[in-house]
Image 1 (tube, rainbow, N blue to C red):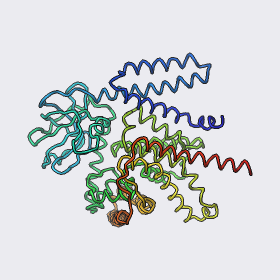
Image 2: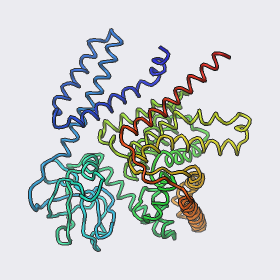
Image 3: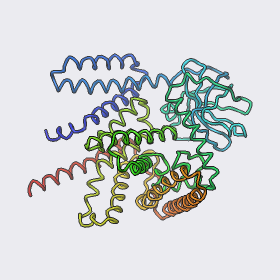
Image 4: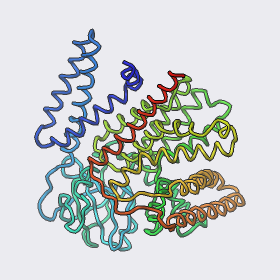
Amino acid sequence: MKLNGQIQLYPVLRLAVFLVTGIVVGEKLYGVLPVSVWFTGFMASLLSAFFVMRSYLWQTVVIFLSFFMLGGCITSYTLDKVNVEMPSGRVAYSAVVVSQPEPKGKVVRCDIVVTDYGQPFKVRASFFRDGRSEQLRAGDGIRACSVLEKPKNFGSSDFDYKRYLLYHGTAATTFLYIDDWCWTVVNIEGLSLLERTRVAALRFRDDILARFDGIGVGGQEYAILAAMSLGERVDISDELNEDYAVSGALHVLSLSGLHLSIIYAMLMLVFFRRKRSVMAQVLIVSAIWTYVFIVGLPVSAVRSAIMLTVYSFVTLLNRNSMSLNTLAVAAVILLITNPLNFYDVGFQLSFVSVMCIVVFYRPIYLLLPQSARDVAPVRWVWQMTAVSFAAQLGAAPLVAFYFGRISCYFLLANFIAIPASTVILYGVVVLVLSGWWTWLNALTVKLLSIVVSFMNAGVSYVASLPGSSIEGVNINLLQLTMVYVIIFSVYVLSFYLKKLRWNRV
């Protein structure tokens, strides 16, 4: 009964578990059970809830079943939209660029949405790299003629590229030579409102990046600045990207909870005297979501924005706002919007890391004696240590599973990268607002150059240390599951042992 009482504290978490279970089963049975079967089951279970309202047990079972059926239904529906038949041979079509084009070797890659073959569908396009293709931007319309092929794997690689593209909503791939395409005006009314908004936001982000390009920061300093502030990682060199990955500090280059929390803290300082007013929180949340749209709605940033939104308004009620329920709300919203998000590595890393911070941060933090925690510098260092260790506890098994690597000096790398990231994001805000004061602009640029150079050098040094990472770690799905079972079993066991000790006292 006590265990059940603990579970009752997280109702949304339980719904999220059944939704995820339905998504996984729906994916496994895709092609066997059509969406109509899932939808019928969902409606039947939903209606059944009204007939068992007097029985709490049966109503709970029916609600869980409804979320399970919902997961299978939306997964089957989403996969139906991706698995569309491609026209044979070379075909002419109109399309709009919906992602930031990325120059890679002899090609420029981006996502395009074909708009004139019934239901719009996404294609991963590789343009032959020349002066024209390098000028492509999100929102550009093109008229093209090429072969649209279903995604397929490369024979020499173990990476399941076909699955990766399908689970990112990509229905086909194509290669476009110089004479295969031209610019044109394309009607984008067939795109969803979210997709149209995202395209507009990416174009606005390009305008901001163009301003950054002229501030006097160049090379890899500019690349890191663009990645941390606007999510643009195209210009980061492979060597520097590898250094951040090996050191365990790659998360600072991906827009996530760290970045949005820093921005949220900035806004809270602006509204310091009125931070508990409804209007102040509405303005703060609006600013957070505006930023998330500008950077292109990456899953990790959307998850953080949802959590901060819940945090913001629950804070007004003076209730515990950072909990597994808050995380579960973000998961349910993202998965109902697009159930294939569950198979995105970034989604998994983001949620598991935050979940482990919510669960393990406080127990780790309390390991330090109270007398030591009373000393401000020690407390600050230990807080960062506890957060970094808790996040790594969740992320490390997944990183080993997907990338075969374990970073050994992640704490050292985070002690360099996180404070530097905070200074950089504050500096970017000052830079954006200081356009009218030349001296302040120049001073900020100089400071940013120094801080970014220091962070790059520090991370590269950590990555160069002997034993900085363990490579070639190969674990399968069962082993990954068992690692997490062991981690949480040790946590539960320690909780009950501590409770037993208190009872004896």
